[in-house]
Length: 145
View 1 (cartoon, rainbow, N blue to C red):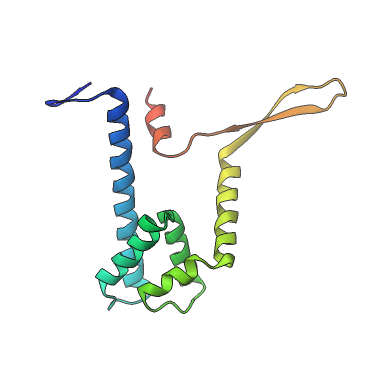
View 2 (view 1 turned 60 degrees about the vertical axis):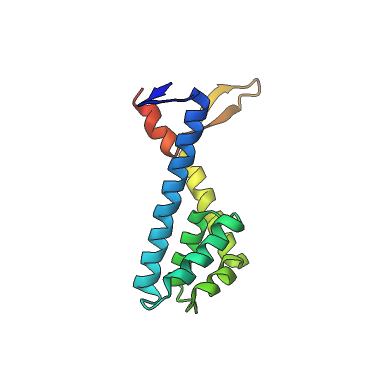
């Protein structure tokens, strides 16, 4: 596959594109977290400390940026005592917030699924199946085909 002057294997190019889109999403999420912190928690935050804590949480511990955004929204809505970037790690580990995030993700998964009745069995009870709608960036690209 030729892209400009470069040649790529099809699978390698797809992996490169996926990595670039994931990195772009991560940068956008970190920018969103920074803006939320400045607007709602403290506008005098030391940004290098905030970025350091976000890198520890997201890159080192492997916590998703969506979960970190959810935790920050939760702290803002519930007026939690969050004053410095290092305190974010305590709220990330809080079981109450983990349960709320799991509930939100389950509701999202249910809303993305469609139910259909395939056929009736011998005892006249219906047989159900669940068809999941594709979500994410790939679903946008697949609609064009």
